[in-house]
Each structure stands twice: as C-alpha cells, then as structure tokens.
Length: 96
Image 1: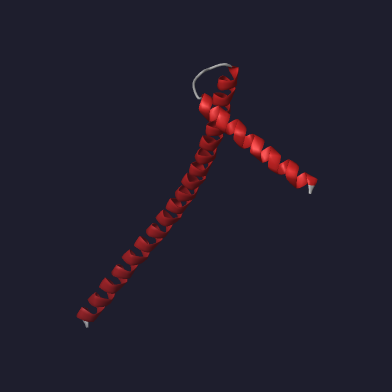
Image 2: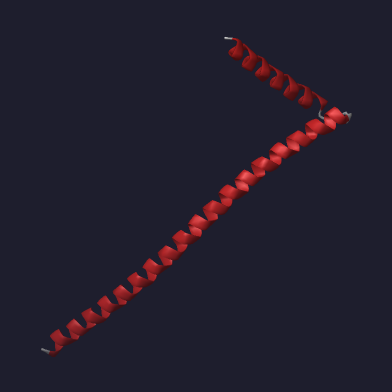
C-alpha cells in the first residue's frame, strides 16, 4: 500500500513540475512573440528609411550633376532620358 501511495505522490509531484514548466514556457513564448513582432516592425521601419535615404541620395546625385559636377553625368543623363520617356508615354495616353 505504501508503494502505491509513494507512486501516486511521485506522479503528483511530476505533474506539478510539468504544469509549472508549461506555464513558464507559455509565458516565455508570449514574451518572445512580442519581441519578435517588435523587431519585425523595427526592421520594416529601417528598410523603409533606407529606401527613402537611397531616393534622397539619388536625387542629390542628380542635383550635383546638373549643378556642374562632372561625376555621375552618365547616370543623370540616363535618369533624365527615362523621365522624358515616361512623360512622352503619359502624353500619348492623354491624346488617345
């Protein structure tokens, strides 16, 4: 009889440990999910900021080339030609 009681107490203690571990891991998982969401949001903001900075840098390069700087002249000419083609396409669409 005492072996049975000891086995039951041991089983209860093991179950309590498992439940305690489960609650701890559940809480830890929730915290990690929140952290993951926050980091993903920060990554998205950083990516958008980088894209905006790149656009500003490209605009600055064009402005410097137009200003008279000899570097990046080819890139500027290509960009201007691209913009002219886009404008021409818009004009054609408006005339139709």
